[in-house]
Length: 353
Image 1 (cartoon, helix red, strand yellow):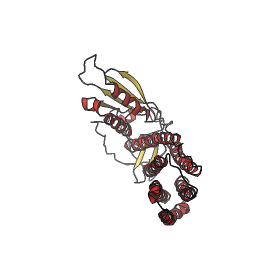
Image 2: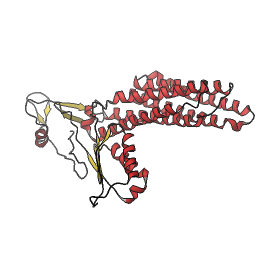
Image 3: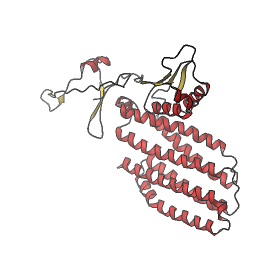
Image 4: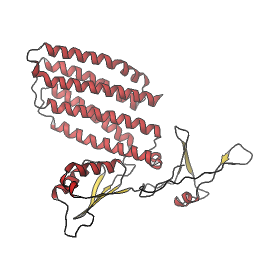
């Protein structure tokens, strides 16, 4: 039975009770009573209804049907110290960790500070940048010795299916745009694509946050219409998508400013186009539960690895092979994308079967 957590999880013990099953009338139906405190908390009466969902492991999840749209609000505090003021990355990691841990309110405060003490300007700037990189967070209070950051997105705005499709489509668009830049020999224009990659990372972290919170709070998972198995499958899927996007980001940075010739352009672009197509097929196999497609992708990946080696051999035939080092890096990154395609296909099979 899912019990709604208190606003502050730290130090809060889970309620565990046993219930005796009672036979109902002359039928074989068995019933049990609900904990009085839980019934009172959700204002349930004899006319109320609850939803009962069987999880993959056979356990039951019970939730009141009249559950309000307000989620439990989790709050955490980050104490400011001198080390944090000197290390820019420390506060960024602290905020991101609390965000992924499901904190809806994050407070940064100076303990025992005088009224006229302020956060260092560089520190305040880094806090602002860190919050801007996390979808749904906003600074709601900025005092000299206290900063309050709040999650302003509701669970309905964090539509997991929609967010998953956004990052999958963004990654496909990123792939297509990079190939187009190579074909047009226009590798000075990658900055806009890097901005798109940064935006996609926001969606990835948001999905990861909601999925993790769903596992910690079954009530949230029920609202998203997901089972525990769905959550695990989606976590694997979006992680592979994000890693693919990271490989594309490295490709963009590697190719930026490079000038290609008529021989190398078709060699690299044609191979990348094949990798992009198998990536698109792997995404479809997961999103649309295509069993045969997933199996075909797993079988097809080795042939593309062989094609990669053929392209490498052609580069080795050129004089001054050091001129093509950046191409070797891009080919290796495409090989990693193929690994992600295989991983996505395997996740699709687990999801289907």
